[in-house]
Amino acid sequence: MEKITVPAIKGRKGKEKISMLTAYDYAFSTIVDTAGIDIILVGDSVGNVMLGYPNTLPVTVEEMIHHTKAVVKGVQRSLVVIDMPFMSYQESIEQARRNAGRMIKESGAECVKLEGGTRMRDVIGALVDIDIPVMGHIGLTPQSVHRMGGYKVQGKGAAEQMLIDDAKAVEEAGAFSVVLEGVPRDLARRITEMLTIPTIGIGAGPDCDGQVLVLHDILGMAGKFRPKFVKTYTNLGELIEKAVKEYVEDVKNGAFPDDSHSFH
Image 1 (cartoon, rainbow, N blue to C red):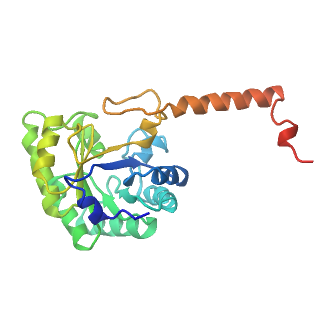
Image 2 (cartoon, rainbow, N blue to C red):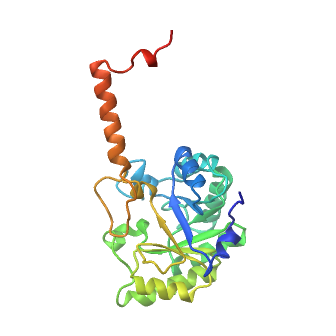
Image 3 (cartoon, helix red, strand yellow):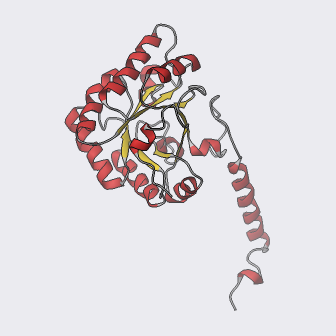
């Protein structure tokens, strides 16, 4: 089983589609890695999915390290990416270097992901200069939810050129790949054709070099909210609820444990 590396992902451009999913703990990372996923993202979506926050903004560096350490322990093949949370890199280049270095050193992840295009050019370049691989993230950037007025498709109309400029800036700064989130399909295709680094889409159509989704979304464990770009492959949430209900009923009526579950 050959370990997937940053250069290997860069080399997939135009040759082989890249698969990427989130994971936030040891149990799921083991399953996802064994199933053959190329990249595991320990996203700051851990705030919404695992910690009950209303958005990603409250997530801390410490929480990202904690969850990523657990994920890394379950991985043998996949490339592991750790998200830099809100206000862990926006303040200054020195802050970004300090936090990125700590997150790589303490979590065991192999690269970081951060949001922003043109405005984050210098930060991306500064991290790459000290040998920390960076995955970019442009378009719908969840850490900018308040500025955007919610989770809305980006890059329409006059904003199209801004997104193209963001993509160019991320590549020129030295990122090895870039996530395109919430972007019109045609624009995502044009950016993918324009860049020499892989694009990984989420709500950006089928023409990107790869795709990423939140694991709990594809497993039907994210509640009733279903973004248009999500495909639910199984409804694990319903299966778990059914199993728990049966367990509760068995305990209450004395069916569990029975003699077969007891020691003699």
